[in-house]
Length: 334
Image 1 (cartoon, rainbow, N blue to C red):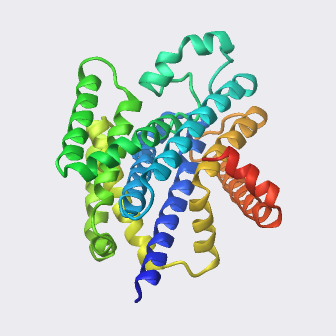
Image 2 (cartoon, rainbow, N blue to C red; image 1 turned 45 degrees about the vertical axis):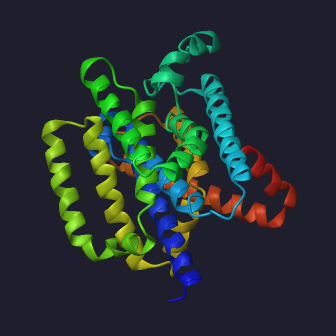
């Protein structure tokens, strides 16, 4: 297989992986909007770390290998994407104060109280005040990316040491004070950059160890049922789950209607994430919260997945039909 074909196959496998994670995120968010919202975190706690882990992986996999590219141009691109994502997070949360469903988050706090609680959102992260909370640590990772990539090039021990420091600090805060979602996920993103430095050939060999990876994941999930979901457990779950999913994606390839839909969802994972939450807000406002393992929850999941898929297909079609729409999309979406 030629290097270009191998690279294309690897990109397809990454997109399928992200697409499959989008489908799992629909399950996660559907459970969030059920009467037993804690089930999502109990069984799918690995999902939020996986998206920033992949972001870090792509930063390393794509940008660290572009030694011939202009570093200043790459840095501007990363900083611009991070700033746009930070603005997008803020705008979406301001809009959520006017459209928030009482069936899930409860009544709106109002903009004054909402921004008065900015340390909880912008510094610590998580909590019940913010929506779309995964966008914030990804924005921070992109803003830090020029420095992180420079460290990776300057000294091979600097980034691993920083990763250990950030994750250790996060674990200590979780045990002795309060957990910081933002700090934890930035550490996961740095871990993704480190994993991205592994050679593509070694990454593609994951499919050979698929049964072992699946067994490791099943064992890890079983342990999690007893020890809970501390951050370290979530990180390990995310790494193992991605090894399993990428191994499957590498085997099934890109042929077929379903695989092509997964690739499209992966290519638009950011808007798919935003769109499914917006749809669930609207749906739960009118239909309420269904019971777990009910027809109502299955209907919520099916409609949300269908709406998300139709949305990304419509965006792809619009970009091919209208240059103005394409430019508008690139202006708004990082």
